[in-house]
Length: 205
Image (cartoon, rainbow, N blue to C red; front, top):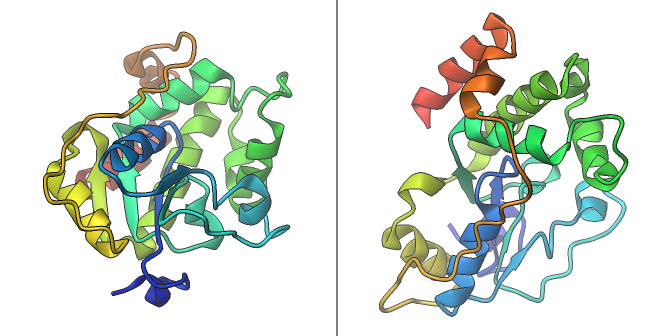
């Protein structure tokens, strides 16, 4: 399928994710391979909330917010407990902090069930589950960042109309921000129901 089949101009590709799942890393790798790629450059908070129209000045946009109003052709995932721990570490779901407001608004608009979580860890896990489910609904290719391959780079390049003759995995930014609890600590801090939701979803990915 071409980009138009996903509602985009031909040879335009959207890659979604959960956030903290390697979207920035993948954008860096694709750019280093000569594929014009943005990271949340097209699918911004305003676009994800329906307040603005996407403006394409790249061939690929890697944005976790694409799973909501749009149809990502590929989905990049990471170990769900590492993702949740990273969200806790940056305070994304800590209501006492205001620095994540515009991005949290995207979550609140599209997956209000996430707000039912009683702690930042519970809200992070609910978000991981909800965004993964939405992305899987449309993704033609699921990429695990831990197993990112040159084939992933080559295929995205073909979709974008930018063939890569010798794909490589250099150029990714790990985007480490502050300290975070361990994945085990986050898993032990949420209910058995949430653990079961994650465990039921991720073996299929």
